[in-house]
Amino acid sequence: MDDDDLTASVPGPPGGRAGLAGPPPRRDPAAVRVAGTGAPKQGRSANRDHEVTLRTQCRPGSRWPTRSLALLAVAPVLRWLVAAESVPYGQPRRSACDHCATPVGPAGPLRPLTPSATCAGCGARVGAPPLAVEFALLLAVAAVLVAARPPIESIAFGWWAVCAVPLLFVDVAVHRLPDRLTYAAAAGTLGLLGVAALVDGDFSAWWRAVLAGLGAALFLAGTTLLLGRRGFGLGDAKLALSAVAVLGWLGWPAVVVGALLTFGASALCGLALLATRRIGRGGHLPFGPFLVLGTLATLALS
Image (tube, rainbow, N blue to C red; front, top):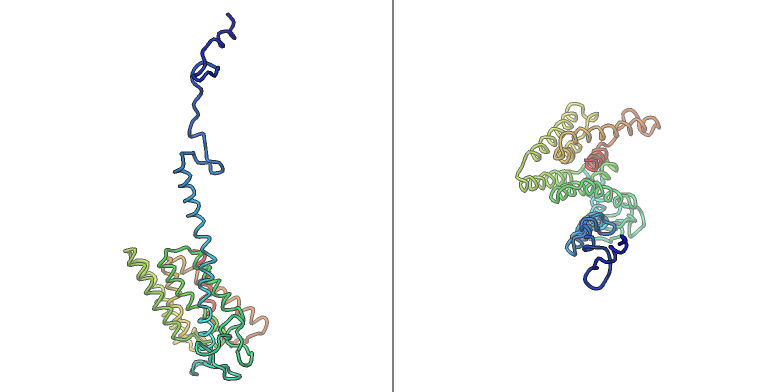
């Protein structure tokens, strides 16, 4: 009998289908994979778990624009603070337009507090340049979000950033850092970081932040007392209390990086202004903006 006859004589599987002897080969479940995922197909539960994972991974990125736009709601308040505090030392806070006496602030028209930054009465510019506060606030929010810290830490860093934005513009305008904002930045930042330490049950990072902030503040204040106008101002020391505390919370390497960025940027800017004769050798360069920008850059890189 030929081999073909032997094969044909073997009864097929139940159901009347003729074929080779024995049951059909069984497929390995691990070999069947969900299309496009590379994961083994294990039924509907695996698909649901995969979909939940995808949604969870996409959720933080999708919140970036939402959080940024939500924080822009405080931009009018920051514009009001910049306009009110941008006055020489010893003068009262600005409450009206310098040209037409139209009220500026919550009790007055909203136009000066919008990105246009113009007086509702005469159209003159009030406070920071148009869109400048909003752009700086977006950069500050982006730095906090890029750092991707736990929620309470992010709130603490966000509080400091919201206080630092108006301080930056006030220092540029009148070379002054108001106590209202520097004290609020220090108290809120250290207080919220203390809550974060309490939740974690570990105060080592908080003590490091306090030591770093106090050390920087004492150093800058010491240069003021020893060198007078040639040293840093007391406002810079008060701002450093909160700014360097943020870096201290991140670790001593962050303090070093922040110091290098801050002093390096300040030195380069001073040399550029001297080279272009924008300031003289006895000129004063505000240090607050460099401290704010250096802290935000280090936070984003951490």
